Length: 260
Ligand SMILES: NC(=O)c1ccc[n+]([C@@H]2O[C@H](COP(=O)([O-])OP(=O)(O)OC[C@H]3O[C@@H](n4cnc5c(N)ncnc54)[C@H](OP(=O)(O)O)[C@@H]3O)[C@@H](O)[C@H]2O)c1
Image 1 (spheres, helix red, strand yellow):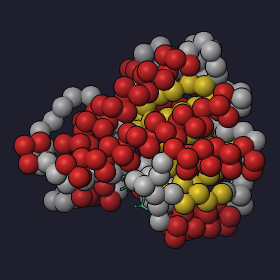
Image 2 (cartoon, helix red, strand yellow; image 1 turned 90 degrees about the vertical axis):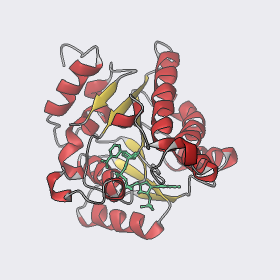
Image 3 (cartoon, helix red, strand yellow; image 1 turned 90 degrees about the horizontal axis):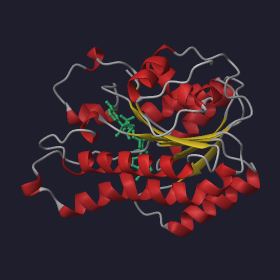
């Protein structure tokens, strides 16, 4: 690509029009969290279809196995399964994860932080503090600890991409979205802080993706009355995921990109 997009809007335009070639992610090792369902599942399959070896992380092993089987049946690079409940994981679990990836693969080129917890919607005045803690643990603390543990191997892997997942309620506060909204503001802050720190000292780029309204279990639980067929399927928003994971976005850092 001759000219790199330099702001969120330009990058969003380029990302949404992106047409990846089949071997875009060949020889790349990419970890996807929440890979068993929804957008994470679609991203894992899309990355594998474009040549990546995907590490499938999630809390429901059967779902991860089903994704693994699809990858195998298609003859794409053999995936790996890493069952983990982000709610209970502590720093030593992430250190073990980093050591395992180092031993098994020696490199890590991509990290898609996609797993997320919505919780119950409702006003902050009545918000359950335990729910608040759980959502912050999965949506923010786990991302921080995992990123910190995996950063050394990613810095050693040549061009690498860390992609966080945000939401419309992560840029502008909205009533009743509680800890979920606050966690997405925090995710954007985490992304911007890390992107600035890595700028110029490593080949790790750090960005956010905002999926928009997508037909998944999480969306259905937030909008139970909505006709899901009016929404895009996860597979339909993958252009931006491919752009941000592949080397064509090498110079894109610190940006928030809308996938729709
Ligand atoms: N769908 C939308 O319209 C939309 C819009 C904006 C942003 N997003 C964001 O996009 C991302 C994916 O959402 P989605 O709609 O695909 O949701 P989803 O279908 O509910 O999938 C969420 C994934 O996260 C995993 N997960 C949840 N808690 C976990 C934990 N404690 N440990 C490990 N994995 C855990 C789930 O695993 P299990 O399947 O095993 O439960 C599942 O695979 C989220 O970050 C969400 O906030 C979605």
